[in-house]
Length: 102
Image (tube, rainbow, N blue to C red; front, top):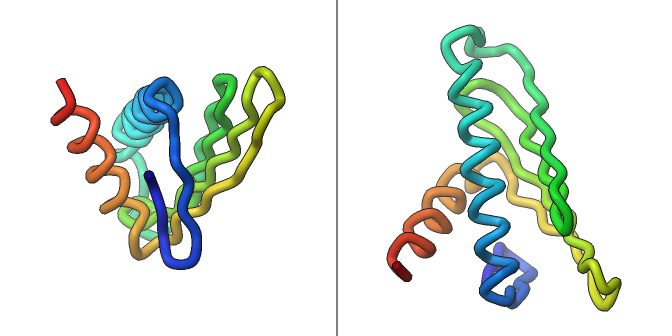
């Protein structure tokens, strides 16, 4: 289960794993350009790999994450948003959580 403030969602293992992989990819994209960014420069990074769409938006050291999920069977869909103060912490917590399952 993943949640922030007033919402939570239970993910199936395959959904959680695909989210984890996309978070790694978007983090890699951020790291690839990190040294070229000025501290106050605005950035937007987007990734789409069904069933997920992920958008990272903010600045070099503070950013938010938005997720849209739509199952391929079109049986459910949802959107998650992690604001700037907590997005980085949640990213690292998900990474730790998945890697602890191995």
